[in-house]
Image 1 (cartoon, rainbow, N blue to C red):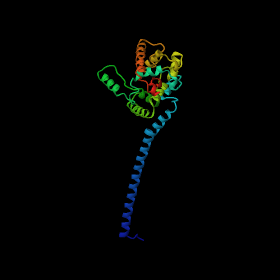
Image 2: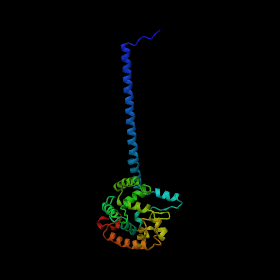
Image 3: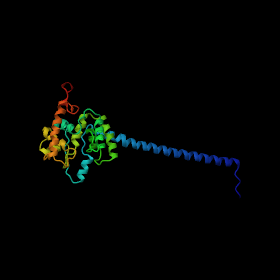
Image 4: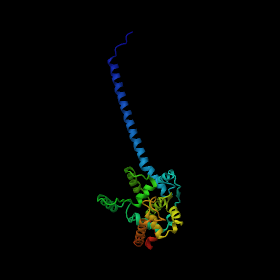
Length: 266
């Protein structure tokens, strides 16, 4: 039998069904887009906020067992020596020496030395010797959390982690981390390993000159020698000894060294 022709009611029902289907498909698409948006925001929050804050928070209480640079050196065949120690078992001479050599305004700035950045930019623009302006806080952030190769991406993360540790850590803890993970060449990481390897003493027993020589080679620890210094390292170490005396006399390391604080603040 031939099918009966659809009535007006049937046609209306069919149109209503198509409209309802289109509405349902639209809602499904919107939900998918909304779900993708929420997922993306969640992933970014975990990657850029939760994980870094948790990681940095853990290092507020424990020492870094290793760093990406240590892993790289180990992969290159070096034997890694790394003995983290508390800052009160480090000679005050090494604290003053690295401040004198690397970041004289360490106790004054909040992670970024604007004056040093401006001076470096002016020097580089004038065609002089290329100068860096990384603070001890920036170097600590890089050494603790990031990879050594230079790039704009790494610099962006370095800025982020620097602001994070400056907010979360006291300066004394930043200095402690810095001296515990800095590279001193030949697989030696941290001041205790460096002091033992270069001078056969513990970090607590470093003299002002030994501390100055270790600070002098920090920019290129695999190129320069602290225990058998050439003319450049000798001159630079002598300058650092003089500057370290100024750091002590003017209490410019007081944020990291309790002994350098006025008696009323100890």
